[in-house]
Image 1 (cartoon, rainbow, N blue to C red):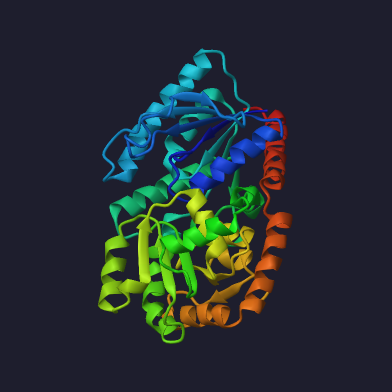
Image 2: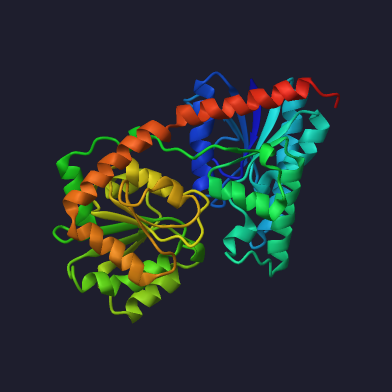
Length: 405
């Protein structure tokens, strides 16, 4: 089965859950016998991505074709439209060189323009995975700016043109039914996954060194990671820090990641007088992230909007006790009192309660974390997710053979 996969992100250009999803799904599909060609733009940082070849076959066998990122990054919609033209040129060159594909698998609206055109040029089915929606991000469903309306229109267009639509959670299935009036029979719910082996085996000295890097040799360590944007709710964690310090005065908080909210979060930590307890390391490597999961006493994900929450799976796989908001896909991943603790969104008192409950009861937190690890291995492994995805591919191709298009 030859699959043309369109994605705005692919390693080393990974900014969020979409990129991590494609980075794990494509190799898993290859292991299952698929021939996967990923068409993706170069990353936004020319220096970091300068060593990436335009075309490569990864160690896992994924065929990656990179195109230049075009347009002004200040307007992501126009940048996507222009970069999609480069993606079209790349695919047309592959076709001219003798490549043939059975279907197109497009990930989110950022590649919708190329996906739609290729569907009709090649006359092959289009499958769309929707990772999030613009209306969902606003929380109230309002589209106030031209950019938001344009993105919503591109999402609608991609979903309409797709033969089937994959979403990562029941929450997202409900969301696209509500926002786009998608028939239930067109939607497949396939969760995101995590690769537990990425967590590795850490020597005690490695873990001690990790804690020392963040000046947390003795007191409890609370860790969170993600894009520093409003929807991830990191500001709620900052507001909760004084409440947690009142009971655990030596606690340290690590808020890792990059994004426009970073300066605001740092200013608020200073205003609350807790800046000495909160560390903002910026971007960290996957290895550093996994090491922090192993040394942290608690991982917190205070999202206001979260279609799924791969970060929660990563914490679970590492055996780190997790505290998450009861929103979107997070409440489908974490079962309160069994595999973690759930809290109310946008509520600093509730967040402080969840962290304090975890820190006060280390044996209970460890038991929940052990159960979470078992759930991850059983329900969220990438080979199982790839098998379900291939089943959807086969269904689409079988239906395609039965219609005159």
